[in-house]
Length: 415
Ligand code: PLP
Image: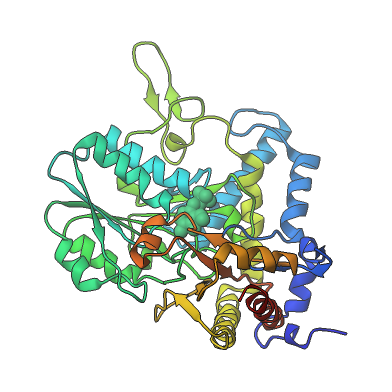
């Protein structure tokens, strides 16, 4: 019998789920419920088949060969760049740089800023307290190496950035402000446009970590007016090992390359090497060709469904989950931002999150436990970690009800 909750109002989830073979399996004798989408999403057949197609038909190195396969692979890679440019509404395709993922994109900019001598003692980098380690450590290293100061934009008990404190931190010394679009640990959606405007008023650049936004919301880098925006393929139904850095053209043109090698040069001699233009200046070496091409297939998949419909569906999931989870005695939500998406972090009084996570796994339910690579957030709430349920477009309210049953069982077993 069909799970009635699959007939969601906004999406044909039955049809969507048919496209995700991995979801149709049992874990520990129970149908899998996959609620670890903030860590990575599962892949639709369109993506899986695009990988096979690439290796079965056009595999070849790009930008080098005159031969047929190399030209085909190059065209496919550049078409994918174009798709991504349109998807995030960048002005030009060469503002889309392929990287290994969000972490790599952040490192690219932080290393390039150091190489370009853009920071010195007295300069400040503002990082929100809501960040994944990926969006903390590279900036820490940059500050250590240049003598600049890293300052933290505080959050409140709801897990929201405190805007008055942010305004107070901005000054003529601020060179860069960085924060995520959506928090992986708490699900907070940040006011990117407003924060960017304030940073620009102070003369600072803005780097937005969009790792958690790409699967949940439409992105318009020009409307947001951000200077840099990064995301990973694997969190948006695409492959691992590939991601994107978007940057404003003039800024990217002026930044020094962060890695040297093939593909990124115009001419090389022992006396003087000149660099290629954008985007190749930042794409040294053979790229993750298959990944870049297949990321385009994942974007097609998302656009065929429509990010607005995905967002509406996921809002329904979140509000259903929050309502149902509040039924559990001792439920403590960590992070209760007014604008939220993607993830719900929680603790149950008297129970260790790890024990609950293990019991849920035995009942086929994949949740994440731990600090979610955001130890400063855990320190802020004075907790070692949380349980986190994070949703994707293929999840259903019926699955949330199954998680509830499992949580009730775990509570009665552990209490
Ligand atoms: N930023 C955020 C908000 C994330 O959630 C993650 C991954 O969980 C990252 C950055 C790092 O992404 P990746 O490991 O794909 O580079």
